[in-house]
Length: 176
Image (cartoon, rainbow, N blue to C red):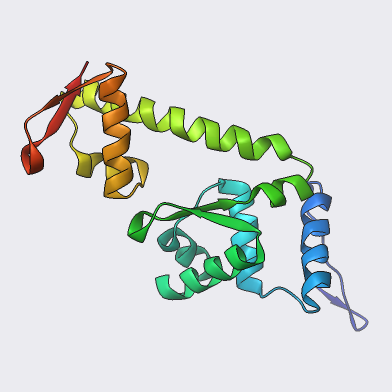
């Protein structure tokens, strides 16, 4: 709404995220320039969703996956976020430093700790629901690289929660 040359902005009813604003201002002071809008969107989205991959961020910033990857890698270089996994399975979370600046140091540890437990539970539940699970299913389900999926399956077999069947490309896992 324009009134006498002024723009009146109606504020939302939600509280401002002062900690997030302080983080942004601190980083901009360190850089000596403003963070690009795509970086701000990425940080804000990670704050909300906790974990993203390139494909997901591309939708939020309305750029290509390569463009989203450049934004994410720039934030990794700044130490604001960190990557997990590799290739198309690579995902990103806020870094421990970022959680510390936001006044939530335990959130990082909680998130990383839950991720491993959640992945194990997802895999075991999938195997129970479908009777079996393959490494490619784990890659898709948990957004892991094939090597990470293999290690997760191997760990679950060692714990007795899954049983390995078959070999090589024909391998699959059933509930333990």
